[in-house]
Image 1 (spheres, rainbow, N blue to C red):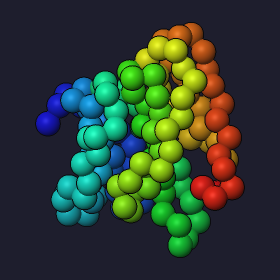
Image 2 (cartoon, one colour):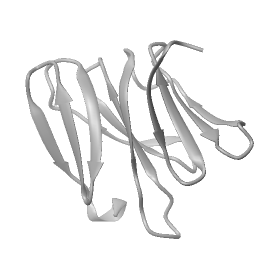
Image 3 (cartoon, one colour):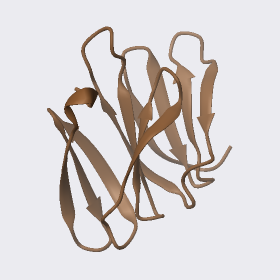
Image 4 (tube, one colour):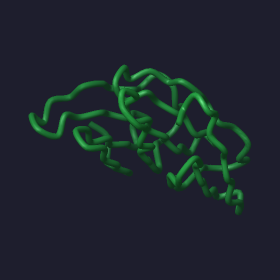
Length: 120
């Protein structure tokens, strides 16, 4: 495993992000690795945020990376459902807020991303 850079939790899942460009999803009860998401980011993962959604929808995870992107993941399936672009330098942190995602970057900007209705 790479050096841990970020973490986030949902009711039953822990997400970890690493310098090795991966996001891993873990079952909190058993400690079992559920998914390793390592084919999308091209640089280290710097931040993670969970987006809660009402049942039967499960949570989404947003990862921030030094590759200037944020990726939105379906936690249940481990699939990337969207890539958010717009920063011109490393994305250093991400925060979830009701109906939004907030990111900050080494490009000296903070961006507010609205969420599509299908994600809510």
